[in-house]
Length: 121
Image (cartoon, rainbow, N blue to C red; front, side, top):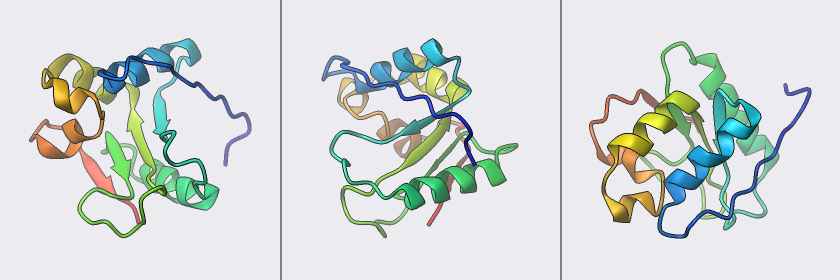
């Protein structure tokens, strides 16, 4: 599915994780961002592939996909998210809630933000 894998690790300020993800993407000219947090060190690559594949299957109409949106079908530590960089950029500029910025995901599913989302199981 992927011929070259580029990995960006950030040491963003702990109070603005959303900005850390935003800052990492331009160094790779990324159109899509796959989010795997440091508290998910044993993430199953197949789960990440399923979420990425679900996103790519519907990419013409999606901004964001995750395996833990509406339900919690996966245990903690197996979270995977895929988002368009332009949607991440919108979230960065529009989300002014400092508590939410500490975790980038709440913006996607707690606001009616115009972000097109899908849960991939």
